[in-house]
Image (cartoon, rainbow, N blue to C red; front, side, top):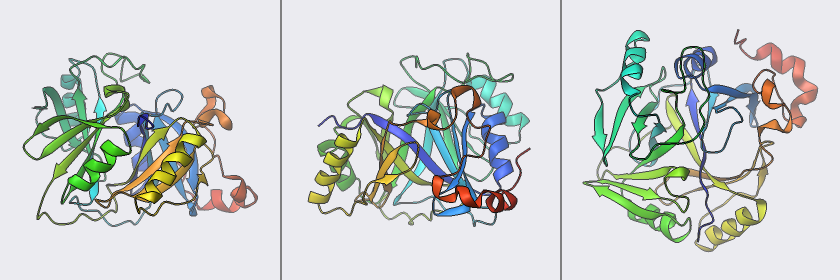
Length: 310
């Protein structure tokens, strides 16, 4: 159908907010695109990290809950987030992870790509992948992480499932993906925009323990749609397939609908518009606490409860 443009963002859960902020801005070198709060829990931050403008396909977001228990990877969940990095950059990342005392595995290969797996401070599994084709996206760079090694955005997201077939059917027949590669129990699906949109890997793990989403886990995976009309058309198709889909929700920086795909993973369809510059200019992204309008009257109280990042 070609209605899905690729991965829009991935949202995960972390523990301490300062630890999360330090890891993704300093260690990983991502831009802090937006500092706001959880729509359902305004005394908890919602952090957005990405490239200079928070381009869809680069956005990793977190709900940091201070006392959250640690999650467990298993079936019925997204278990890996893959970033694209330039050829020749993995040696830099190995040294950096060593310096930061980050747990990692030695580089390996998958579908012809070399990759490096590590865990963030909360145990979230991340892969840095050198793709076969050079990723031309412009990265965000810092004083410590230059353009020759910086992440370009998402390369893939992995879902671990008891049975991949119902999820694969949804990806192919509704989202417009196609099976690109397969090795043993891992199946790589490519969207209508090719590798630019990010791959979805399905790992079939029959009999494996069901995962538990908590600290260090992916909360949901959001797919990119260009506008409201496309989103609502897809929403109707999903409902017609018997899936329970939420009404459209205004998330200020995009509009969203949510549903659980047949394998149990929470999916979101998110619009490109209006984007992250709706309330801050590009040069000031992430420098202010931006509140949804309904919480603005409570700003002083909310600010007093949030952990200071500096």
